[in-house]
Length: 386
Image 1 (tube, one colour):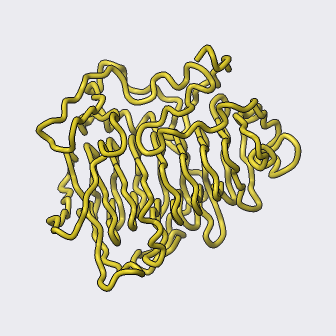
Image 2 (image 1 turned 180 degrees about the horizontal axis):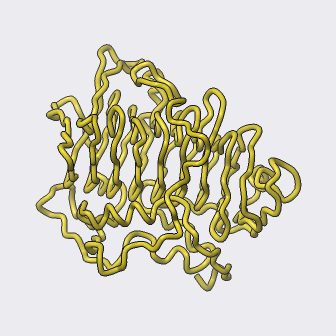
């Protein structure tokens, strides 16, 4: 979604189609390299009383153990997303835009479905693909790229989108994944997104309880918008967690937030063109143990004042930075919090999350292990056995 406060045009980020995503077949760093992460278990939201517990792996080491092990396993605000847990498997057998065996045909069905792919390749979408409630779109075991248009999550709930690529969306208001209006309990995990004419992921119009994890974002301008515009005061309900993602040279909006509450942790954002993170009207952004690595533009955090439709004066949002790493001359750009600004703490909403110090080891892991991965599709197991 465009906005007059942002700058530039996305077209300068297109290439000739020959610039690949990072090679996901390369081996990740060995288990001995990364600093062990923590399972974050705060008691109350004060730094003196948090007692991290040591863990042995990055988030979600178990979700590839069986097909449906993804269900309700997201960290953060999207933790309740079950997807198609209680439905049968739907097999995508064609790369056609529509018709029997297509992704579109599975996504429009009303019953819960766990959607998997029997084919690899590119699906050229001629229009937005609407995803109905209680669906898992599971790209493990194949390499599926969506292009032309994107996915639209409209007034739906309990959707999981996993291990897909999105590239080359064309047309006005065309996002890779558009979540609006009033959708909830969404988990987007391990997807690669680049080069759409609008946003890569947009979350607006009272959509909430969403987690975005282990995703790769590249070759794009307005990457992620959370909160539509100052007239949509209902977006005060929005809550989003973004963790272990890699924003690789994308220009701005990592994310840009209006009204909502957003928890960012263990993300790596580098070489932005305008800013890394932007707090607009009444937003609350809790930035924890992220890596911000500037290129030519040194300031990571930006504040934009806007007037909510039901208020008399303009306000920006708030950003709290805890344990973030600002490297290569990066300047945080933090403003002093004033008495009018509220700030949530994640522990008010969920008890634990996995976080580790923002080190070079974390940076290496995020470069290798975000976005689409060459992983096999796990076997399905009876629910009672999981």
